[in-house]
Length: 471
Image (spheres, rainbow, N blue to C red):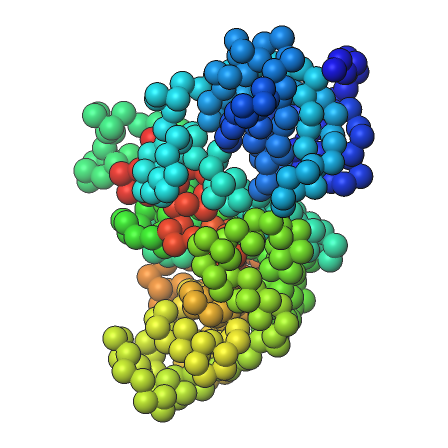
């Protein structure tokens, strides 16, 4: 069979699987997942190009001129271009297949050395070959779900009139006041310039001052929110925390909306609507990938997401939450008392046992929260909120921001921060201050929650963690 396809554009595998494609001439390209040869003189090739979880079956007959010389040498990982026709498949569990009119080998993969030959390869091993792991079912599915979450995030804010703002990656301020930041410098580390008192002379550095990789785009986001009303930042952030766990990354992506003329109530409602939208979009637009995660990774992921989408989030104050925990009769690893930072076990009790749905805890003690959160009239708590979900606990953290200049300056001093270093942040309160609020959502933790993947390093393309920066 000869197929005239000189003018054909490449057809994605996902489109060849549709019933309406039957009878169409196509050019399909991808990587070989399997090859089965029949005694009848033909081969079945499973071809995947990443456009969908499923592969398309290609029927290659021995009448192809390169059948003996090339087709029968194809192994897993080889790349091919197939020109052919989409036909109805007689095979069980598939609607279509592609009958090849020609098959061109683009690149062989040596079966003896290709690392993805074996099934059941551990995630730990796959992290060492991050350049190849996207070709596996699991990591292809992770990439598509991550993409859908990103698309949903942008659509959510854009459809509500938010402006997308790019916060700087290099910054001279520390949003959290934690000090665990990666330094950015061009100074010669073997010959550091010193001041008279022996300190590093950063005036001789590239930027003329000490600079770091950002831990958050929030403070810069507030600049634009106090001019353009509603904005969101979405970009990479960095923490130099030496935590070598399944829940920590040194480089990760954060989504941080900031809303002027907004209080904590509006902030909580936005966060609830935001999560419901993301989870609904993932369920609706990634059904095949989610079915895989539900079958192979965590048999509760779909049920959990559906439960959140259909729930009305419970809202309780921190003081109420502590009282509930104290009266629960549960034995917690970390004892409960007013003033502690709630641990995952406490948060999961509230979501999984007490309320059996997502919970928003608000009005936390000021001493365990950041300086920029609005102080309540009791002078003990701030207008902070954490959104808690089953299985993980906190997934969103946010607050109404402190808009009163004198209170903010006092809070900075209490946090051992020099207000002079935040002069521009204080100017936002000097010149036309307004009530405003915002929150942060970690992209990787969201992907991990949606997929059920056990290690956060498996939901980012190239994980950065202590002693891990190979790719």
